[in-house]
Length: 267
Image (cartoon, rainbow, N blue to C red):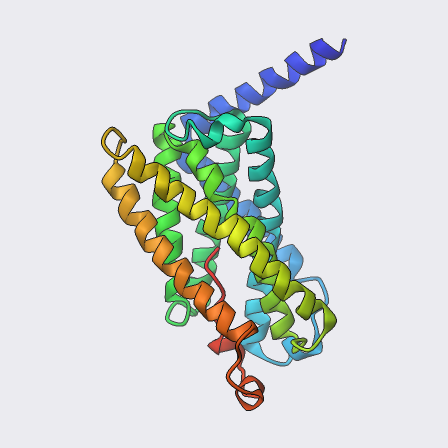
């Protein structure tokens, strides 16, 4: 009986995968719509007073709330995929599973939704770094969805979302003016740990894989350029993070902090 249920579940998963692979673009748009619905639902939740009185803080809080949902979902999903199928770390070029392919569809939908939210709400100028990041990610993810190559690599890349959870929490606490709270102090150390273990390590591992296998990889040059740009960005943000949380200039400088001056790491 249990084997029969397992086989039935696998058949349904394969059937869903077949649909997604036939219509990857439409699948991404459907996922983007799902995140937009989540965005609308999250607006019904109460927000801190410090957030509610400022238009930019209010928008950023709503935007981060959706990002937090994405990070909790995809970070956990990515790590689970690799635990179940360790081959993803060594067969990055061609290996993938149905859950892994679905994960990339869902995550691509989020990046489409987030880019749209930034542009349509008039925050493109102040968030241009995020838009560049989203374009780089989307071109890689969409290539994987259409070609069925590097899906495992995209899954490993989503390890960074584990760190994004603590990054989003950090900025949400700042928006709520809770920089002196015990939660912020604990989170800044967790954030540093996850940044190194999940963000830097995942990015550098993928870069190492591309360099080692560059001679035979499909679109190797494009991926190497993309990873180089991404690595440059995350190292700059890592420096900013260390300076802001561990080596602040002065108390007077911290007191003048404004949410529009704060740039989180693109997720």
